Image (tube, rainbow, N blue to C red; front, side):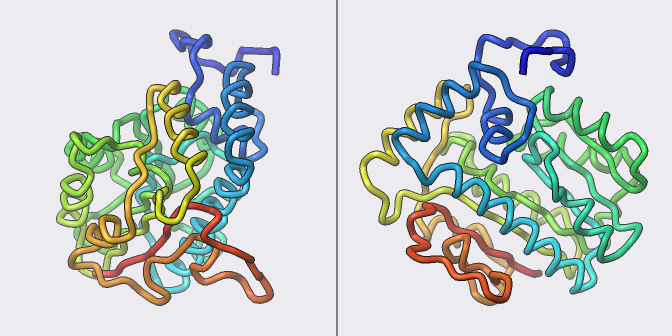
Length: 266
């Protein structure tokens, strides 16, 4: 893209953005040369990275469809990124019109585009907040008046917690979100892992720090611990393509995707 009218004022276009790199891998159109350059470096080291990101998006869509059919009507999508085809509100509202969806992201580019795209979509809202600031995420969401935290809420943390460093206490962040939602709520997490991954994945992780939001790879045991009080539904915490694949979907060597996914229910 050469036209930068879509980039909000004040954005440093000389530095890659994690949200725009993700948009590139998803086949979107909101990315810059600097983002594509970094994406190329990462992809050269880990050829499966694009497939992993697309698999993560597909998991989120399957999870939302599962939750909607289970009766969930409120969704808090934290780390939502730049809007792409098959967003949470599209899936949820197709299953149950009127379902409320609030998107939260720290990237101003992602937030501005979300607001523009959702301007005429009912029961949706967007919050600019860092996932690490649980208090702001919850208070800003409450101010929108779309979500009743006393009723079941699906908290979606798909591909965001691996951007949270250990010193920011990701376990504490998830615990705060679990404590804020009512009985019958759900927790959705997908997260990158080093489990069974080759050395080049670790090297690609180092490149991610150039976006200002480096990736932390975590173990199955650590990620599973974040579901405390929210027992995992079948098939548990598994490699992302293995979480309730659509009929006929077959994935060879699912471990190559290097990420786990799971859904828990209170």
